[in-house]
Length: 451
Image 1 (cartoon, rainbow, N blue to C red):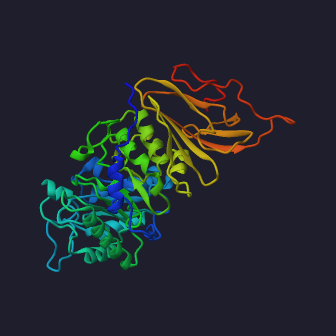
Image 2: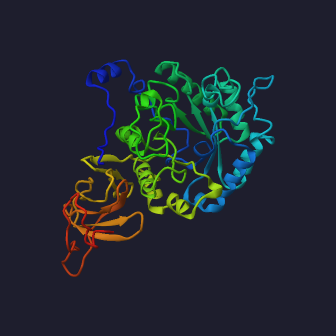
Image 3: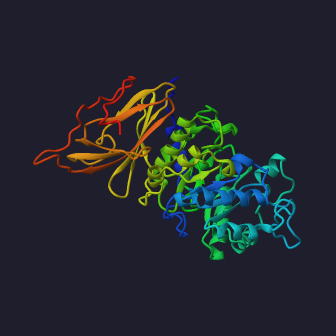
């Protein structure tokens, strides 16, 4: 079936009231966080999606080894993030955090040292409230959150060699002002350690208001969760207000409308990648990666690295798509077409070009096309159009000449467009030999445009 993308919206009255109450934007004059980190969206791996609480020291070491050996490190995946369940149920007598002595016998610093020796960076999980998500849900004993220990914990993270902190609200309690204050407190504590640490926050966990998408967190954190937790599904149609997990299309509907607050050092976070975790078809996994790249999202893999099929490794490392995600301009793409059965996103790039994705939101194959003019490119005699899945390039003559492809259901074609003046002989320009009209029919495009 065809399903049109719809982002949840506040009513006009609610927007006025929220803006008046300071709920949608930081205090006037607040600058985006600049702690020297995350100038492009962070890339790496996190333990939660595949393992949950079933983690130990050896698993993390093996996963880091696999990340380095697989070639993903060279593709840009550098952070190895240990999620919830790493800590002992109680702090020591001095109030310091302690790693679980059975599952992490060598301690966190030794684990971070191993990760660093591989040319990787080390990340860790904590919460600003009393209990982690696993502790609140009963999967882990204790109450070892950072509340009341912020500076002590930040000092420990710096001492251990932490490069990335995932800081998760994990409570139904607290106002937006409470969240801003708590997340800011840890931001300042991390800054005062003198160690550059990527600061990733999630205001949404367990909280009914889902403030990640209602407030511009750029002065507070390097990245902030905008949605409910992801699950390996195309779309769940779940109401995020009840805490239900969301699929790729659901999350895109929320995150795509927040482009104005993303940029170098501060990113909207639509949650971690489910590529290779299971539950998504190969076409859906490609769409997942392409849309996250178009939205300038952090690319944090969550698959089992020690048992990674070659096709998953190759997808995660797709050079053209990674280059789009890591483009130094840092501009998040915007939706330029959301008609029935299609979603077209255009993203400006540092070299003056654009990346354009054509997503088939329907279940069956369809021909999708757009133009350079629709993508926001300036008028030019011709455009180089590179298919970022295959690397093949074609030339399209003129801003109004359509380009595109037959796209499978839930699949995505993704291109890089660059304006250029290319001569095809004296005084002649390249021209598409058989231009195709945008259509939802199931015919195939002429080869000159099917790049």
